[in-house]
Amino acid sequence: MYLFLIAALVVVLDQLTKYFVSTFMDSGQSIPIINNWLYLTYVRNPGAAFGMLPYRTVFFIVVTVVVAVFIVYYYRTLPPGYRLLRVALALQLGGAVGNLIDRVRNAYVVDFIDVSFFPPVFNVADSAIVIGIGLFVIAFWRMSSTLDGKF
Image (cartoon, rainbow, N blue to C red; front, side):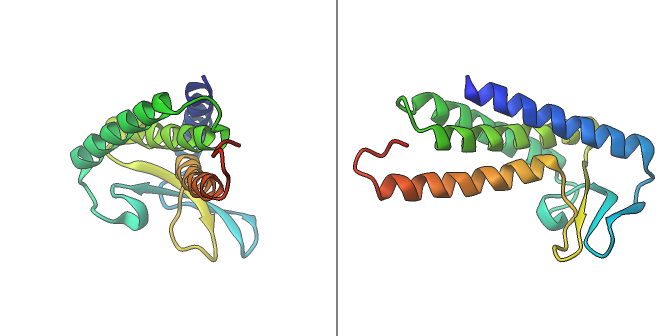
């Protein structure tokens, strides 16, 4: 149940923020939130992270669907427990679906979080994926250091 609840929350937050940015800002517009550090910058990204492989929309859609199916399958095969691993997978699924919706609807992903010391502009879905990957690594590290592997 965690999987779909957390994933749904990520998708809703991601899509709402993208809707507001794309409705109330012009592409390329940047608004300082915290001067010299955080900006709201509306970017249409037709590629992957850092704009790699631009305009490969069908490829990204196929890869995302395969990854999403794998996440759901892996989640369902986990024995009881493994909460951190389950949250990690749910965040990754929610982020993947959030960006998938953009790719299917627009053939690009709406990015808007612009941190001055980190070159790419990103979004809520990207953040959920990165946090999910981090939690996934921590979960495996913790599993390898415990006898029963549950936490």
